[in-house]
Image 1: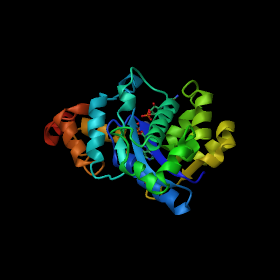
Image 2: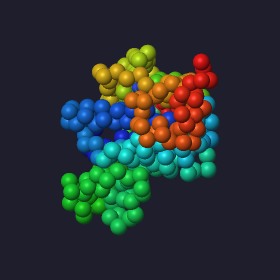
Image 3: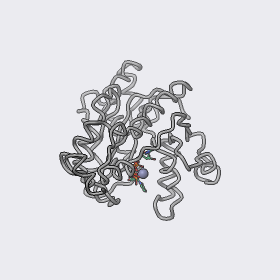
Image 4: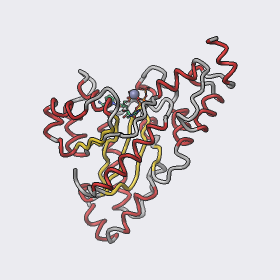
Length: 265
Ligand SMILES: Nc1ncnc2c1ncn2[C@@H]1O[C@H](COP(=O)(O)OP(=O)(O)OP(=O)(O)O)[C@@H](O)[C@H]1O
Ligand SMILES: NC(=O)c1ccc[n+]([C@@H]2O[C@H](COP(=O)(O)O)[C@@H](O)[C@H]2O)c1
Ligand SMILES: [Zn+2]
């Protein structure tokens, strides 16, 4: 994996966000810094458009609001609303390229407006390079700018093999041009998966596999199930997210836990 300035981008439904979605970023940043193979200058969570149509995908406005609540305490991870603002679903490759191009444009044109999703430290990379020098280097050459890498769990990586889901050229661009940072997940064997895929094996230097030693199998599915049954989902996600879910009665949650529990008694 190349040295340089990296922004980690996680795509997905985040319906609702869990602590593990955010832990992925911390695990990846520590791992990359400890190996000395790059500098993480920011993280972006990019929730998918409503048109993705996955089961129990609540409206983007809610998923964005919940992500913002969950990320209140993060100094380096931001939510990008860009995908949700497009006219339909956006391929991940296109979204990664958009975010990378926008970041590098902001860096090379020092007066350009920074989008709200730009993590604060991204612009501080100028303190690493002389601004004029950086602007010259970035002129049409993203290699010298920030690289946006896809941060995902092993199940998302394994979805590359689902027939018709990902175009071959998209996998080639995501892995070849950007790079993947993959967090292990129970029931998956990402090393074997990479070995068995010609496209991934070819670019295996650009795929960083991380073992999550502090295993945490929380998922959005688990939280939705607990809420539907009127059980507690506390300590699996941010309290603000749970309060928001109850306020808007998302996922079949009722404002009060005991009221909802009566349904299953
Ligand atoms: N426990 C986990 N360990 C590792 N990666 C995870 C974990 N939970 C989610 N992810 C990763 O987070 C990203 C967003 O996934 P997604 O929105 O589907 O979350 P999810 O918790 O898997 O939700 P759902 O249960 O609805 O599928 C994906 O890259 C997924 O692999
Ligand atoms: N061809 C593609 O670019 C492609 C295909 C399938 C899923 N995805 C993305 O992967 C993510 C998957 O999210 P879920 O794991 O919640 O289904 C979404 O952000 C979606 O846009 C991209
Ligand atoms: Zn999932």
